[in-house]
Amino acid sequence: MNYKFFTQKSTNTPQSQPIKGRESEMVQGRSGGYMFDAGIWSMLRRCLLIGTAKSTYYAGKQELTDDFVNVIRQCVHENPARVAQEILYASDGRAINNSAPIFALVLLSMGEAPEAKQAFGEIFAQVVRTGSHFYEWLSYTKSLRGFGKIVRECGKSWLSNPNVKALAYQLLKYQQRQGFSHRDALRLFHVKPISDEHQALYNWVVKGWQELPTDIPSETLAQIWWYEWLKRNPDRTHEAIACGHLTHEMAAPVGKMDRQAWQLLFNEMPIGALLRNLGSLTELGVLRVDDKANLKRVESMLNSKEHLHKGRIHPIDVLKALKTYQSGGQLGRSQKTWQAIPRIVDILEKSVELSFDAIAPTGKVFMHAVDVSGSMSYTTVSSVGLTCCEIATAMALVTAKSEQNYAIRGFATDFCDLRVTAKDSFSSALQKASDRNFGGTDASVAYDWMIQHKFKADIICFWTDSESWAGRRHPSEALAAYRQKVNPNAKAVYVTLAPYRITLSDPKDPMSWDLGGFDPGTPRIIQMLATGDL
Image (cartoon, rainbow, N blue to C red; front, side, top):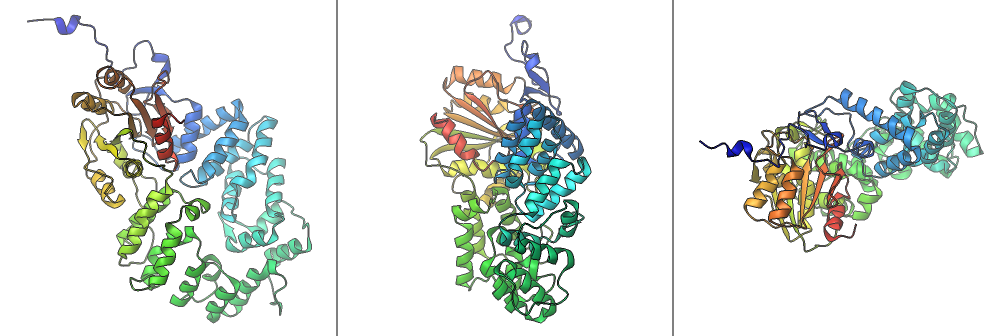
C-alpha cells in the first residue's frame, strides 16, 4: 500500500473550486463551477449581442434581465460614452435583433450624469431607425422612466425628420405598435410642422383623409395617396401596389391579396421581408421550381454580401429562415404549409455563409471545440427553436469553410468527433450537432484529447456558454499543460454564447481571448487572431 497519491502535490484544481491564489478573480457560475469573472464591459456586450429576453438552461429571462439592467447601470455610471458606443456596435447588424440595444438606450437615458443624457441624444437616431423601433422605444420608455426633456427632444426630432418622404414611409408602414399610434406620439411630443409637407403629413396622421384628393398632392405623399385610394378600391390591389410601390404592411390590411398581388410585392420586396416570406411565397406559387426569373431574384438578393450587409441581416435570421423553410411550415408561426424548393434551400445555405464575415485561408491549424452539453441544447434564441449548440456549430463551420486545416469536435464530459467537415451543408451540420446533445460540461477534455493525440493546433476555438463545471482541472490549467507538452505557441479563443458574466479565458494569459455573442464578424476576428493581425 502506497500513499504517494496523497503526498504528491497536485497542480490541478477541480472546476468545482476556484484556483488557489486566484479566488478574487473567479466567480461561481450558475452551474456550480468556478470561472473567471468576465467583468462588466464583456457582460454588457454579451447582453447587447445576445439579448436576455429568453431563458437559458441555468437562468430565467427575468434573472438574466435583472443582471443586464444592473450591468448597464454600473457601466453608465462609469463611462456613459463607452456604453453608447457599445449600443451602436450591437445595433449595427451585430445583435440578434435591435431589441436589446433599444432597451439599453432607454437605460442610458436614465443615467444621472449629463454625459449620459448627451450620449443618449447623440446616438438615438442611429439606433431607432424605423417606425417599429420607435414604437418599441416608446413602450420601454413609458414603462421604465416616463417622458422627460431629453426624451421629448429626441421623440420630436425623430418625428420631424427633414426627409419627409422617408418619414411618410415609416408612418404609413408602421401605423401602430405596442399600444401606441403615431397620432399618440405627435400629441405626446407636441410636434410642430417645420414645412408645408410636414403639415400635410401630420394632418393625415391625425385626421386621415375624409375625401381622397383628385390628384396626388406631392411625391412625398404619393404612397399615402395610393394607400387611401386602395382603401376605397380594395378590388384594385394590383394597380395600387404597382403604381404606389406599397409594401405588404400597407396593402394587406386594406386590399384583396391574391397570387398576382404577392408577385407584385415580391418584385420590390426588401431582403428582410423576403427572408420572412419565402414559405408564403412558395405556398402561393410565386416561387416555383419552373419559375427561373423569380428564383434568380431570390438568389441575387440573398447571395449578395452587399444586400445582406445593407439590410443588416444577421446570420441567425438566415439560419432561422433556412430551418423554417425546410420544415415546410412545421416550424415557426406560419399557418401555411409548402413543399420546399431545393434551389431555395441551396441559396439559403450559401446565404448563411455569406452573412458571416470571414477572410481567405490563413494556413493555420484550427481546432473547433463545440459545446454539445445538455445546457447548449436547452437554450433557444429564436421562435424557430435554434439552440446555442446549433448556432455554435454553424459559426464553427463558417470558419472551417474558410480554412484548409481544421477539426470540429464536440465536448461535454468527453471530446467526440461530430463528423462535421467543410463539405457539410449547414443543415446537415446542425443535425449532427443536435444528435450529440447530452451530459455535463467540461471544456478541459478538449485539451486532454489534444495532448493524448499530440494534435498540434495553432488556435483552439471554444463555442460554449462557458458553464464548465464537471472537470478535474480548469481549462486554463489544461491549456498550460497542452502548451508545455504539445505546442507552446497555441492560442485559445472562447466564444461565449450566453449572457453570463463568466469566462474560461484566463485574463492573465496574453494568448487567450474571450469573444461574446453571435457577432457575424467573429469568424474574421478569430482568423485575424490566428495570424497575429489583431
